[in-house]
Image (cartoon, rainbow, N blue to C red):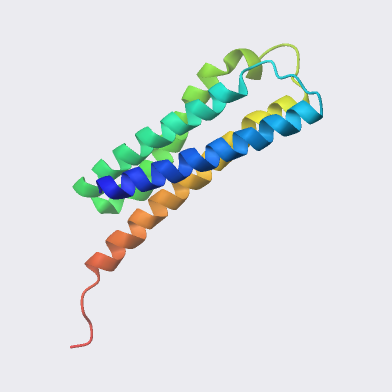
Length: 136
């Protein structure tokens, strides 16, 4: 459990770091200034992924049949917390440029993919351990 947690969090952090470097370079080349800190967005989603992976491991230990439901619940919580954190940007009277909106979506989608993959791996792992031997 601990090894899996550390491995997936390391991979997510490394991928996030690589993508934020590329993302920042592209924004610099296009001379786009964002009204928020892109680094804070990536850190927010990485911290949420870390919390997600710890909590989903706990849920998997208690009841591995509820991992999918917990994934959906944490997705909803993440969207709500994200909305509260970036309320000023998302709900301002001035509509942010498309590049600013897309720049917020990139880390969100990246970490949603990591969370979904992590949840699916746990579900598949628990399904493989529970299957009875039908060869008899």
